[in-house]
Structure formats: C-alpha cells, structure tokens
Length: 243
Image (cartoon, rainbow, N blue to C red; front, side, top):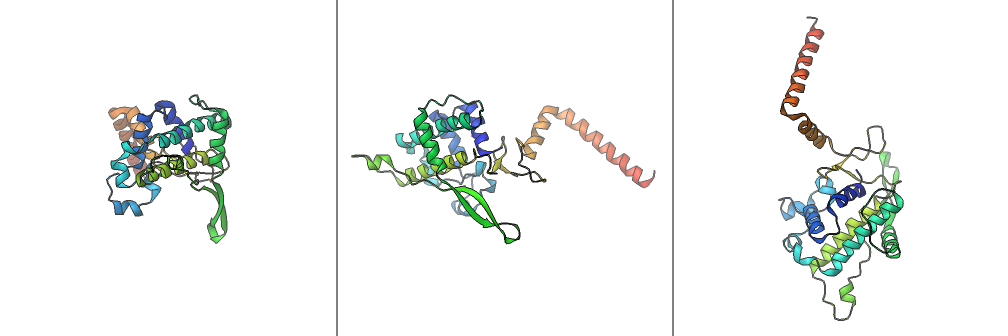
C-alpha cells in the first residue's frame, strides 16, 4: 500500500485529527524501538514503520508537552487537507475534510510545490529520474508574531518531522510516481513492484498474510494443511524413486 492509503485507512478508523489519537499514532512511528541513540543515527529507514526516522530521545521523552497550538494546527490542517486531496483526486471515501476549500487548496499546493525531479545513477550507471520532496521553508508563527514565545529546539524538531511526513503523504498521492510501499498491518516497508515490474497492489506483507491465514484457519486447520503437505512430499519422493 502507498503511504496515502495507510494514512487514509488509519484516519478512517481512528480520526487522525483527534489530538489524543494522532499524538499517540505519531509517537509510535517515531519511537526508537529500543535501539541506542548511536544505532538510530546510522540505522536504515528500511526497517522503520512507514519509513519514519526515530526522533531524538529528548523529543520522545517530552512528546506530550511539545504540542503547542501552532504545531497541532499544522498537523490537523495537514490531515484535513489530505482528506480534501483524496476526495478531489482519488474519489475515495474519506472523513469530511471540514476545512475551507481555499485554505485546503493553498496547503495542498504548498506541499506539492516541494516536489522536485532529481537524477540518480540507475542500472548500468545510466541516469534515472525520480521525484522527491524537500522540507518547506518553515515559518514558526509564534516567533514571528509580537510577544510570541520562541520554539524550543525539540519543538523545532517535531515541527520539521511533521512537515517532512506530510510532504511524503502528499507526494504519494501522485499516480505517476512509484513511491514507497508499506504493509497495511505492520507498516513495514515492502517491495513497491512485482517481479514483472508492475506496481504492487499487495495490501499486506507475506509475513502478515501468513499470520492472518493462520488465524483464519485455526490451529487444527493449520495442522491439517501441514499433514497434507507432508504426505504429498512423501508421495512425490516415492514417485521420484520409482517406488
């Protein structure tokens, strides 16, 4: 599943504009997972839920206190605009976007403006072109307004991380771009293409599909399949030996 599909599914079931919900949801994505700070600094995003880099320990420890109104508004506006963008471009069912169309259009266009075409060496060292997104030039509103309290370094980090994540979500809405794909269950990265080079339509990874199959079959059902497979393997062996 593309990133936008994962967000849509979770927003549909959880409502990612509810502060208590989205703060916990994002915290799960940004946790270090028990790794040390030095390990996190060099760890590949290939094993991270939705490809999100772990936040610094200070951000994780103070997570709940960092969500000042300007940061919360940035996330909530982003998700409501995401609903608007899904409704506009995909004709998929989504929660009511509850945001004025002109504001939603401005936010959406603002994020789309971060998309860039970059060239990188492809197979045979030929240049391959792909799309990427760069963080916007963030304006910390409270610092720009008279008497506004300055953002703490941890609040700046949180704001930037939200901005980068939303930029990736909006980028993933572009149909021509084969963006990263993730398992809809464990949210781990999966192959974005099939062996034949087509875009993958798999909703879950092979591990989660197997676990779901086991649950649906039940213990006895799994054992029955295993016994049949074992018996077939023995029969095939005997046939090969000419017995």
